[in-house]
Image 1 (tube, rainbow, N blue to C red):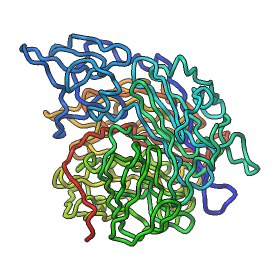
Image 2 (image 1 turned 45 degrees about the horizontal axis):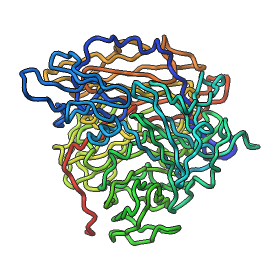
Image 3 (image 1 turned 180 degrees about the vertical axis):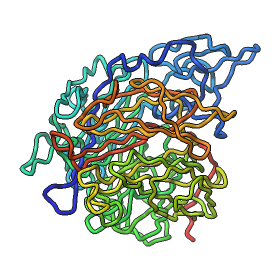
Image 4 (image 1 turned 60 degrees about the vertical axis):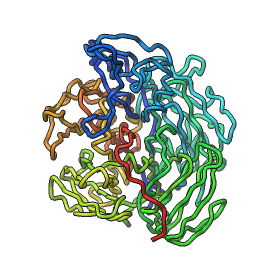
Length: 599
């Protein structure tokens, strides 16, 4: 993320558009026989590992020695030899619970797949920002037909949906043909709110005229606002960015969005970082149904307003949301560690108007990450930072979910030995590690932060800026991801961490533009590697570049996507960065419920 050139302490950033890969990028994957798999996740339909303790194997039909299952891409019903018994055509997919074809969107709902057909994008509080956008990638094998609503009104898709082409200064946009739909593997940018053009300070707005003005969509301070409802007729993956625009904008945050089918009713509330001298932490609670009653047990007093009540610490606070509404609490007193309970599923966004990392370091940037419910949080994480921009460490932040959580570390990196409910511990390390609790009934949260570009005495000046990215539990790794890399950033680095099978054997991980990845290094019982897609002055690395990509393996693995700007480009990209998980499983992996009872 970038910093305001016209203010002494802030930064403007831009995550941005995506260019589509050519079809040749996907030619690495041979047709062959499809393999059986389990429930998938948001980066694609390749499922999380059953070895993690999940009962994810597809149901098999009885009546013969050769049972049937779902293929790894969920498009076919196959037998135990991998032969296709039935192909699921069009908008149908294989239901792993029934081992038969059914509506693909309903399959995603019934099986808690974290790709989905129903999303909400929330324009959170941030400095600046005049272009709020969402990215939608089609994970299915037929065109995806999209619908977008705001405040109950459907927006004309042809006016807001565009296909990006190229990268950097050559980036262009082609309107999406809403009748034809979004082709398989393509990514569309939905320009949801903002203004077009530039202001007098050179701050970039949207490249096309959005239909909804910034002030009509963005929630400022503590208030009840509205989210954008995005729907598809086949499973897709979606992200949001605030604001969009690359090097010409500032304070950008981006997040993987989780479909409503994996939302929950019990969360540990978290902010993306703590209060600083220029901006406040925030969080947003999003409702998909009318009459959603939310109860929050806050760790600090809530300073209410605009539809949200005030209340003291350690006293339950309640309010009601209707479909498409979101409650934003933006205040200096942090709420990380508060307990959130609702009578109907909700989505939770951890945010910060403009975070400084480490605390007090210029510049500041907006941060946002969508957080899974408690039952999808893990007890084991791998911590592998992005390729260092210069020679800096990453900042790591752990949050406890259950009292008495004992931690063991593969490597001594300065992390805590225990966590209590709501306890936050931050440390810095460039050394990869694996951290585990004593079991699934002691989940916790791990964030990775990129530091501000003014840290380390200016050694990082111009190279990226502060950001917050949610780490994915090892138990929620997937076998395949359709992801995209923002083409307005000249540096893009992927971090891949893979799990072995039950015999301790690691499977190849294949990236469409690079083939089988190498350079694997040991960390705990896992292995990790990194690969660049683009570097320097927007120079492709080998056959890779930014845009949409597919990455697969026979075994589960984790994927983080990082991008940043540098002083080494002809167009201005300094003090800009972004990062997000390429996807994750959101399957229930524990039975923990944290109850909002006062202590």
